[in-house]
Amino acid sequence: SKGVPCGTYSPSHFISYFPCNSGMEQVRWGILSTAKIAEKTVMAIHSAENSRAVAVASRSEEKANSWARQFNVERGMGSYDEMINSQDIDAIYIPLPTALKAEWAVKAAVAGKHILVEKPLPGLRDVDELSSMVSTCEKHGVQFMDGTMWLHSIRTKMISEMLDRKDIGKVKRVIAAMTFRAPSEEWLHGGNGRTDKSREPMGCLGDQGWYPIGAILFAKRYVAPVAVRLDTWELNRVDTIVGATGTVFFEDGSTGVFDCGATSCHRSQFEIVGENGTIRVEDQVGGQGRSGYFEAYEKEYTGSTYFKMDDKMGKETVIDVEGCDHTKLMIQDFSDCIQRKEIDSSWPSKSLLAQKVLVALFKSYENGGEKIVLSD
Image (cartoon, rainbow, N blue to C red; front, side, top):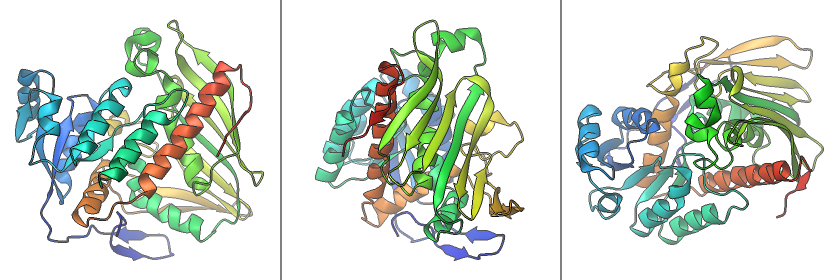
């Protein structure tokens, strides 16, 4: 099944999927870090029928034990190596700082652990570290996936089918954005990992930019672009990118345009413009509609219940979709690969392509907005 859920699809205005229940033993998960984002992921592991939260590791055993008690994880571990070498863990979620991800992902893969790595992914001027992570996983027969949860939603899978059928014809343009206003001046000027280039080298381009770039590549069915250009950018007081706009160019003449960052109002959206219609998603990452409920990014949340579609004359139809928790479905999809012993190579391929585009965009920034041709 390679992560595709069982279910039925009706070409009307409603879709219904239901999770497979294979009766196999649950996948045993370890969480390598007590980072804030791990809180949402551990809730998803608890909710996923095919998964079980076995352990959390920290460099402080006291902190690991405290976190394990708080989030109902079976036990805490006082070192990352202890988790890597544990015989009762099948998969490891890695939400470490960007600079540490490659080292521990490679160690985990060598130890035979399947790895789910939180984005941003490593690689500022090339994708060598990420390629090493992926090739190590391939060599040791383990699954690699990054933590892009929206790709696993029922809505995304429905839109994917529509694009494959060319329901809106050839895709001519994609417009995508992931922005929000920084909660404070301190946060904006280095007080958060994504606004401090010593912790996240690409700044908000590498963090928020991952989502609109991912939406553009998704809409173009992961055909590699021929060139990119970072059109504008904003730097904070510690010389980190906190806002950016850019263009992605494809061989067929189509383009994707995006903006990202922490200097404008909250938007998480994309529009796919085809010859015969458009598809619009207004809540790409959180799935919270236009509710303004920002906590959907941090807590368990069932959403992504609609998208909009226009015909070639611009007549709009709202397509209702069964609500879901993106993160839960990501965990289920990942665990399904492990249970069925079917490594899905499409996931690392998507990660590598997105990172390659981001590296080229950063190079454009370093070269003053030069258009960068992507090599094969």
